[in-house]
Image (tube, rainbow over all chains, first blue to last red; front, side, top):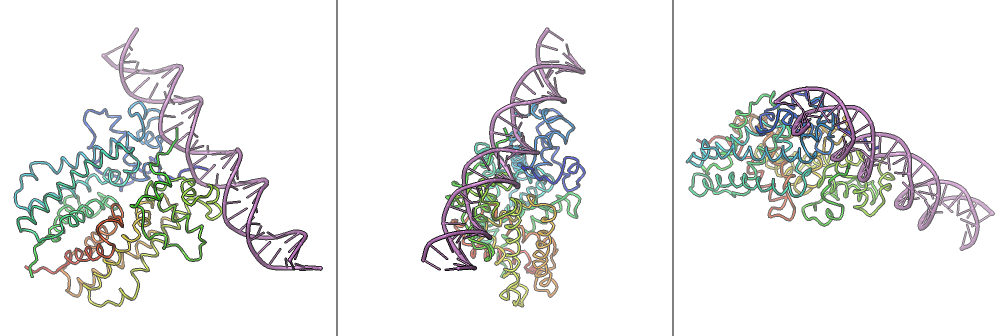
Length: 222
Length: 222
DNA sequence: CTATAGTGAGTAAGCGCATAGTCATCGCTG
DNA sequence: CAGCGATGACTATGCGCTTACTCACTATAG
């Protein structure tokens, strides 16, 4: 029997407080209400059970439509995943490239702003972010490559902020690549455990992780 | 067409240097060579494509056997995953509970030893660790609960080390739960990107992350 | 009348797993 | 040590079910 064991149905997912976040606000404005609803349903299913354990039936059920209705709005299940992951990656990058961050001059203030914004974004959209971070293997090779390129740009933005502080002496002479990767790890890994109804708001967690990030690059006081 | 799009075949996986690690040394000694080979093949497939995108044919092909041969040694595909995840979790825990670590008295030295060992273990067995961390949704509810219990004990071991340093004043009065979670995130997230043929050996990365961990709890010098 | 959203009823193919049988190996008997 | 039944690893075949996706069709709105 090829029975797949997706342990949670569409109904379970809609009621689960661990799967509530602000992902429904992410989708492109030019999409219709039904398409955005399908994306929201898909994001929940993919986050809870994984891309391959989710059926087109699950996604459609989440918005009260028949399985075939999915194909009126999307040409394939993979393209639903791609739309989610692409939009997610683009939104984070533009969230970092706002004047509120790029205008900050001091290296420490700038790094703080970046880590705080990046972390809070992942917390606020942790369900979609989980799909963005953990379901990349569901993409076709071509789509995967496109996403990797966006990730490269995001990581470079992070790394530049660390490198700038090291260059002007406001940070300790740390290994830029390794320290940057550690900061990214902190923010990314929260998609595994974060929930909006927990003790930390996205903003609070963002500030907490920004504090940690600055400790990692603090100039030696000995 | 219900074709799964596992992007990598058994042959690709055996040749991929990113999927080489020390996982083959993990399996129980009382298992036969064929069973251990199947586990090693399964770990590669699960790590590269995910549990649901991996077929029993993929696993068997990886050791040059027919699909049905899997069922001579394991009663189901899920139990292959369970064996991998269970052994992985047990091995980390016993790797932390060695006298080499539990005998260390000073809070800082002890935390350093724990983070270093935990990180290095994940790096050395990063392929199996990836399955342990990211494929938990493939388990049945009962098996999932068992694994969560082992994880709880491992996390408690970590948290105690942080709490001890805070209590005796050798660490700053940090938020124990949040800081512990951040340290765990650093080590766990490396399963997404680490490779043995990269610039960092497991031991070196372990020491690097132990340094970072101590910075997170360093008493304020201002 | 045209265009769009949606459906019921499929289809081809892939899935986990079962069954029946092959074959090499082994312990036991005389 | 020949002869033989028992055992266990392994395979060829394929069943019963699920999957992503299709298509002919209907309902509705402009």
